Length: 64
Image 1 (cartoon, helix red, strand yellow):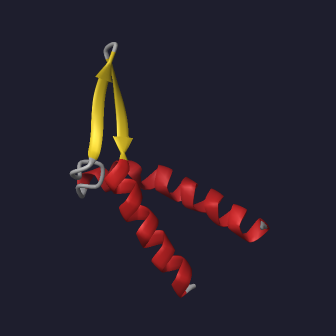
Image 2: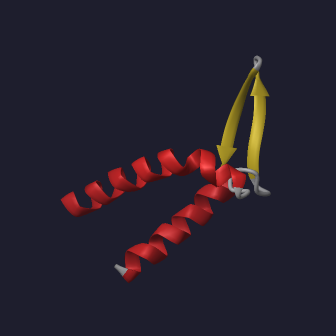
């Protein structure tokens, strides 16, 4: 249980740090990522990006 929690925390920190750089490569603007303007604020729902990053992290986790 502790191993999974530590992996999740590390993955979230790494993705948070890399998020601005990933947008330069097109992640965050994929078909299926939704941006909605609500009361003057943009609400971003990255469905496709989340699925792709989840698959990538799953593959990396299986290799390790």
